[in-house]
Image (cartoon, rainbow, N blue to C red):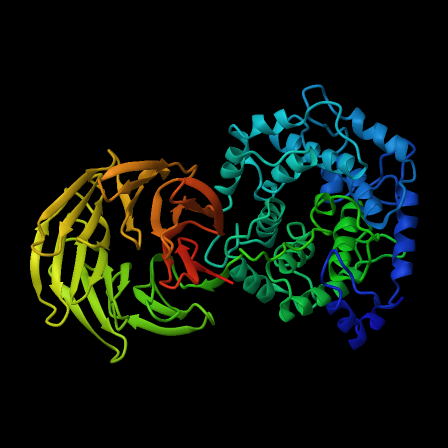
Length: 633
């Protein structure tokens, strides 16, 4: 087998056709696959020890590199993983099982005897126990003692001190032990995975990979997945690798990048080409002893063997067993992880240049208006996901947006203490000035515009003259939400109240003391029968507008109910109760029964929801700088 043969066009075409795990193309490239696999068997035959463990390399005195030097649990786990991948039997399988089980203490943790990590440290406990659970699961076995208390103890505090690449250890270990990661543990780990504007963690592909691996394990989209793909593609070296830092820091970078491209950019031609190029580089790391080094010319190492072989499997160069082994997603770091299937409930995604504070959908077209943290309002077509217009003029961030009844105009509020009215046909706008605080809520009523600010003031404006016709000292704190009701306007405030104002003379009709915290959002059902009030700390109240009695309080596990909106048929209520840096479940409640009937998932915190008048589209946007759009079939 020669590297030159790998570089022909037929190889690249074949690789591109093989990038859909778990199903592989029927005709793999004949470029030494049999030779590679035979070499692997030879490597493992030479490194297998009589006690069931494995040497880091062929030389018995070689101490290993990276994981294989870190803990003697690594080489045996990776051997189990590779053998399971190809349907091989371990050289001394019974002894390997005995070896693994002998390393567990009654307290649950597994320990290393050789290696640089301290087995008593939190890092050592997490690493060794996860690796052992992976190996045992691959062999169809369970630990002698419950290992999960080990993770429960570390999740109390010590998890914060672990390296950034430790995040996906937790869901992997829990799943290998037969349970999903607990909700509180999930929340704690996610709080550590704070992506930058490009979706990267710690400015490094390794930590970013572990985030992608984490969300793949829990079955959710990775926050800023599209941005991550762009960065990973940009970072690839000409030789196909992703070695951006000192080699000692980047030993697994190519595997990490390939996994990330597969799972965040599945099907994209640029990703497929990058993975094919990475496969060439991984093959250049193969040695005459049948193993692989971390770099071309580097000593064959048990750790490198797993990551280079894993790269070749993900690229389709090496075929795994057919059928795939049970639970392929739990074999080490995801080289057999099936792609997350796109469900009918999965949204389309729109990237924004900054956080999304507010959304509104045009009453007669699929146009979506999104208020953005870059001081603009951006209009998109929900049907085609193409940008339509960018409205510029505000001097600070946008806080609120609403369409006029016919959709000819858009009104916006901003931290610059003004509102603006935009004529979409003439591409003109007028300024509504006079608020003392930031304008954080707006509403359109026929020829009247209503705005609310942080000072608790509501102003009534004439749409034609842009003159203020009435100023109301409405609340003792921020007017967070305004919504049109048959009687006029409902306003929700941080003072904990919702007030109903008569359109005829703007007098107070009804006051609801909703909470001693804050009202975040207010919505009225299209049939006018119900008023929904989203509160801080995750609760949403449902009120009957006939007798103004509370019907139910809908509980959420998450934080503030930033946005509430009814579906166009008034039968369902959508509640976005989100927390920063955490994917949001938009709860779907049946209005008649007050039962939760489902959820829509957005990869970040949701600050705003919008539903089209015809019920065809639902949009959600927030702090992760993306908008999710669900289209009704």
